[in-house]
Structures are given as C-alpha cells and as structure tokens.
Length: 319
Ligand code: BDR
Ligand code: CA
Image (cartoon, rainbow, N blue to C red):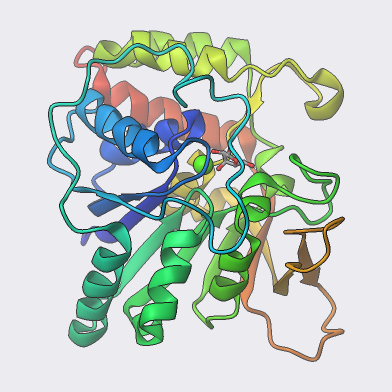
C-alpha cells in the first residue's frame, strides 16, 4: 500500500483534534505537515493546540506550521462550542515541540511547488477557514497542479447555516479565501453541514470511545463530552456533529459516502448571505462542476471506522 501524502490545514478546535487523532493512527496516510490557521481561536492558540494534540497522539514528528493571523478581508470570527482554549476542558501538558520557523503559506508554496515538479501530488485536508491555501494560490497559482484534490469541511446547501441563517462557520469566517479556492480548478470533495449533521456523536458513542481509546481515553472523553450540544430539535438526538473528522473518514472509506457533482459558488458580497455556498445542481450556470458534494453518509459505518482507529491507541485491543 502506498500511503496518501496529506497536509492537514486546520484550526483546532475540538472536532479538528478528533480528526487529527484519527489520522495519526491511520497508516493509509503519510502526514507531511499540519498547517494551522486563525479560526476557532487565534492562530497562536491553534498552533499550540495542534502541537499538544500531536504530542498526545504520539506524533510529535509531524511538523506544525503557523498560518495566517486573520482572514483575507474580513475581521476574524471565533468558533463557538470549543471552550476558552479551543480544546474544551481538556487539560494537556504544555507542548515540548515548537512550530516550524517558516510560515504555513511559505511551506504550502514550496511543498506544493515541489509536488508539481515531481508529479507526486499531495492531498489537502481543509478543516478550517481556507485562508492559508488561498494565500498560497495567490502567491503562486501554479501550485494548483501539485494538489491531487482538496477534501474540505465547510458550507451548507440544503441545510441552513450554523453561524448565520445561510452560512456555515468556515465559509463565513473567510468567504474570500473560499472563493479563491473554489475558483482554482483544483478537484474538491466538499463535506457540508448536509453531511456532517448526519453523524451525531451521542453520549452513548462517547462512552464507547472512552472505553476503546486506551492511553488517550481520558483526553478523548474530555474532548468528546464537551462537544455535546444538546440541540435535539436541530440534530434529532443529543450530541454534536462530527464535522471535521468526516474529511478523514471520506479519505479512509469513500464507500461510506454518496456524492453529487455540482458547481459551487461562494457568496462574498452580500452581508445577509455572506459566505453562503450555492450549488448549481442542474447546470443552470452553464459552468462545469468544480466539486463532489457529499449528500449522504453511512453514520453507523463512520462511527465504527473511528472506534476502530481510536482503539489503536489501546494496546489491549490493537492487534
Ligand atoms: C466547522 O466550524 C468549526 O467550529 C469546526 O471546527 C468545523 O470546522 C463546522 O462548521
Ligand atoms: Ca475546524
């Protein structure tokens, strides 16, 4: 098996952290780097959180880069539901490792440029506002040819938004960056709220993850328990949606997902609908599709997949 080379661009964030912990124990991936961005928390904090999660997951070998300190045009908006540090009530030791000296945007320009030259293309996992990638594409548009595909969490199509009436958080925070990325011609797999609201991490699931996760059980339980939104009216049950981890799940098991091709546009002018993702499902725009949008998820299959991955932290369960 040749491992898929990935870069994880993220703003940890509880669900980003769960995604990272699942990716760390998946041999299907060669994780080249983590690039942190301003989003759920200021970038200094998302970098620190990324370093802490790497150390928790035993992957201090993965380089962490500091990305953009703010969105391209708009003022920063911080995440809700992630607590004061971005990792809920989870108490982790101060990180030992330091972030890399180069910035994330510089790294993306260099590494994706190298991928373009060698033909060994890299997959980008985007779990936060897309500022870092948009800046890299503005500096050197040719790096698009070094990207195999972008698998991103963000947007809302037939679902309402989660931060405004129309708009999902990652898209609202940096709609101009999303516009740059969705206009780049790079193949995109989009995991919007329509998909992530199908996979709710209930208190029962949390108990199972706690029991499965061996040496990281206490931290996993703290992270996941904090994620319980208790919005039964919205999600149909107690719990919180597994947004960012679905990016990792799609890469590991695309058979658990159904997608539909469409052209995606990002609204970046209207205040009322700022950041809204608009899909041309039926070709009205006359433009070719630029993304596969996930419309259906086998939620039980995804939970089982993640339980299997988290049990790899447990020497009593791991084969
Ligand atoms: C997205 O918003 C953030 O708060 C989460 O980390 C996720 O990336 C969901 O709308
Ligand atoms: Ca995120």
